[in-house]
Length: 375
Image (cartoon, rainbow, N blue to C red; front, side):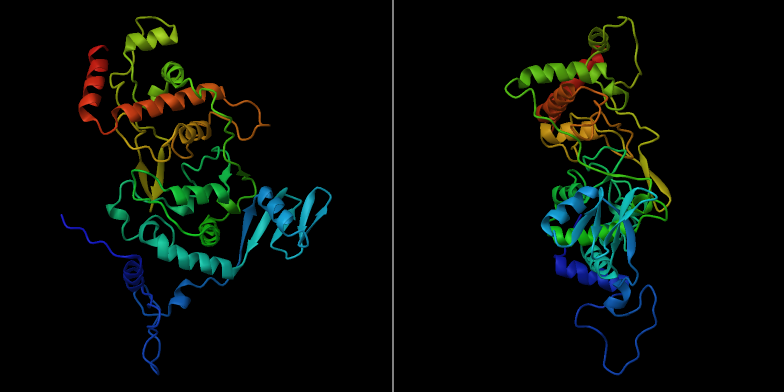
């Protein structure tokens, strides 16, 4: 099958033509009345992309504190709260949150860059239904849902801008979401626009939500003891019943021994396959999209190419994917659901499965056959 690849300029020109935008320098013949507006009209690009109203979005207090340190003349403290002389950030005493008023100019810049970099997949309106979306698996996410996976932020929180920027720069391995070398300044504008797509009373428009940090990640206690970490992680993986979603990688007899339970305990018949969870779906244009939890012996992990990244994924959980939060948000937070040294061990074990079997079909087939034969 022949595939056509366009450079970024050609792709933007094609997208502009399909979306009814004029390319720069192609504003129409002088003296002619502009074409009527419509999905395939030749309306000027600025008219199609300009946003005229500001948007009020939840703000993260850590961002405000950082700005206050950088621009001390702009901020002053009123008791425990910051007052921004520009009015961009404001404390809401009733709801006890900070709001950021994002200017129409910022949103317009963000929308223009979103159309250039993101709309071909995520859609002109960020609904996950871009012109490439039908051919992509998994399909692009709809930003109207305000749910983001793999941000390394515990699922109870909305992700902060820094976490989202890291995600865009990293990309999602094994998906069409590639690494993007867009500057942080432009990404801040794009993210401001993306957050404006949250529905009324949802996402960054919901005062009951809270923006959070990346999950607390202590130093790896298994440095220099990786073999012990893998052995401990194998046990923890099966005792913690990670196989309730992901495949098991031990025989039933071995699992029973590790769990210290009845040796005659039986398990699901498809123990060595992933299980589809009802709560691991999201919507694109009203259609439910469900994704199986990965089999670590052959599928590419989205954002877990090192034990450090794998720890963060496990500890933070994956919002909207049925993967709960196991760690804690900060060092001062109450202890997480699982001891952090145990999470580190599982991270090493998962990475060992990837490193041992990924891209090695014969070795993987023999390993999985040995488990099924010993079941």
